[in-house]
Length: 229
Image (cartoon, rainbow, N blue to C red):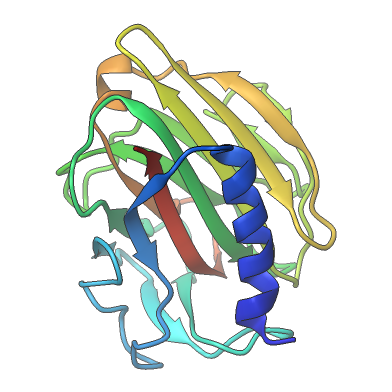
């Protein structure tokens, strides 16, 4: 079975779980298969655009990790403390209130520090880190939410797994459902978003990055953000 088939199976299942009985429109999709290995990812992706804040590190398209067959992006931050390194995925258009879903495939090696996935307002620059929700993939292989005591799940090292986050953003609140799945990954959490509601209502980008105090390199692929029609 090819890696594409292997990963699109779980993604299709997660999309069904996120949006049962609902048609969804794609706001961001990046797979990196048409990008050049050894170079930064192309700005224009299948849907939406990519912005980079390389700081003291690099963001490059790389060959697949073990068990995979197509290009990934590797975010490397080799020294600490030093300016953070990030890749931002910007939506093709702003949609406002609604139900959104994110799916992405991660590969985090044994020696990698904290990896962060965060949710940002539309139109924000690649060097600006304002967010209303973020997840930290911690050294003990659990996921911490918003730098708080809220922790869920477990994920494997040195093999790829999928992270799924659904967001229901209304005029009065923002709630989320987070889940990990794939070989060696498990756990889910329902969470009331505590970040500024006005930022959640402007949702328009996601970011994968490593902060100034951490070192390592990790890979990400098949990033998909959809919204219920």
